[in-house]
Image (cartoon, rainbow, N blue to C red):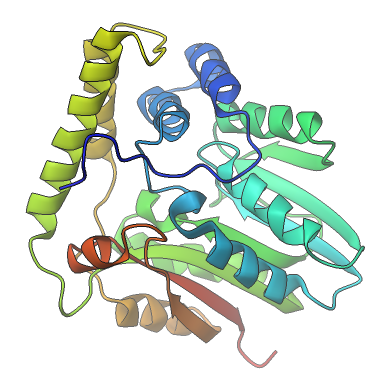
Amino acid sequence: MLPDDFRFPTPTRENLPRLARIAFDTGAVHCRGCRDYHLTWPYLRAMGLNGAGPEFNLPLHVEMLGRVAAGRRDTRWLLAGSADAGVLAAVQEAITALPPAGHDITVLDRCPTPLALCRDHAESTDLAITTVAADLMSFDPPKPFDVILGHQVVLFFRDEDRPALYRRLASWLDPSGRLCLTVANQTPTSSGTADFHADFNRWRVGRIRAEAAAGTIDLPEDVEIFVARMDRRLERLNKDARFGIAHYVRQLEEAGLAVIEATPMPDADQTTEMARNGRNRHLIVAERRGA
């Protein structure tokens, strides 16, 4: 298991302690059943105890996003769902590395809490964005997008409902546009996935309790209340370790998309252990069939 002093890196330009506090305050007003998720996520990232955000392998995210946006004079982006400002920060890193061009960024989520975090991050880094509070299954964009990015968004949909989601996303793409999805998947050599996740969560809870007792972390509430939120969040999320990458590719193709690439994305710091224990990720790039 991970050593006590291990921390996942937070390489983006986010002010995570500030965003975590905003999530706590804003979620109390706006979240409806999603507060445990939106509150714990930025706090765990701020403490270096998450490991599932875009920092899982930020260089690969940035490289891929830069590649799909390269050569476009003006790029319309849609961030389809956002736990906090992490995915927005990854897009920001990608476009900063590109030659000067126009970028119109829309962040969509059905909950106002992550949108508030994205606005705060954008304002603090002089990035222009538009935020939209809407459900992906009812949103009707006024114009097509050049790049649609869904970072682990499929986790929040039942497997049988995902083809409908993919069809909607495909219909929003410009003819030359790209759909970019980050997915969690099982590999043929993965083993001990359930045990690994249980051990990983015990390690994380142990670090939170120990550091709260030592006064080295600043939680907004009693540590046991925070830990209970984490447990409820894990219960609500769908677990996709049972699906291989071929399953995602097949569903996307059946939804009218052509998969251009499906790139393995190992953890940047714990490659062997994470991949062996089922924490494998892929970056999928797809386009509308016939484009």
